[in-house]
Image 1: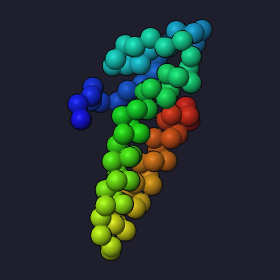
Image 2: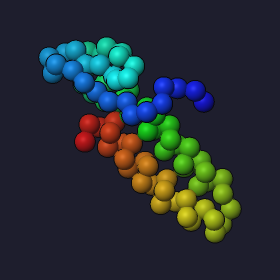
Image 3: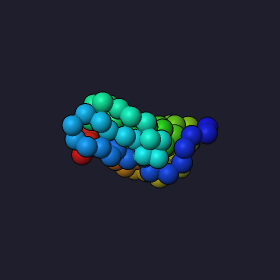
Length: 81
């Protein structure tokens, strides 16, 4: 899948104009901006979950914690934590 690589982050004035860097997409609400900025992290977390679910036992047990960590991190970013 092709998308803009690197960390996406929210910048803005705090009064209704938020931007997603490096996309420079303008978003009026902070919650929407945080969710959009977390998209690459959420994608990578879903890939990790797919890897975990697709792997045979016992190899999948190594992937379980990786997937869980990526999910926790991506959800926190989406929630602005």
